[in-house]
Image (cartoon, rainbow, N blue to C red):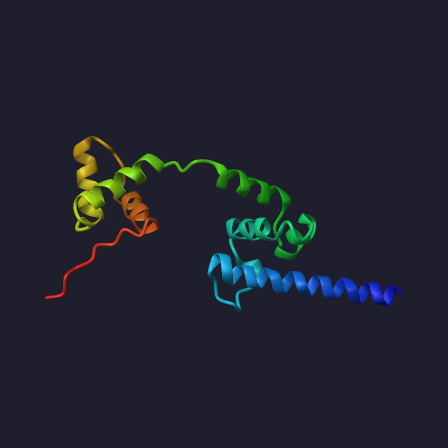
Length: 139
């Protein structure tokens, strides 16, 4: 009977690895050939949360090479509100008010005139995360 149990465990492990690879492509939008151990801890946490109702937490963490403390740390961080949430809404508002013609430099200048001190890099990052891209007319 031990050989049958070993085979069942091996089948279960292979199913887990297959599900992890499928979810990596589906949720994180990574290449199908990516090694799950090369993902960031944040991405691994997203995968664990997606598969947690199908597999025990201990198995998932072991398969992904993620420590328990890192998993719970990244879960806690993900649940916190964004540091730049208000700024993000203001940037979107400014972008829309100017018909999507202002890039990060002009948006940064508008924010500076309003008295909001923030780095151009932060404005650029927020704009890229929100998908705010200036579309140029072809002449």
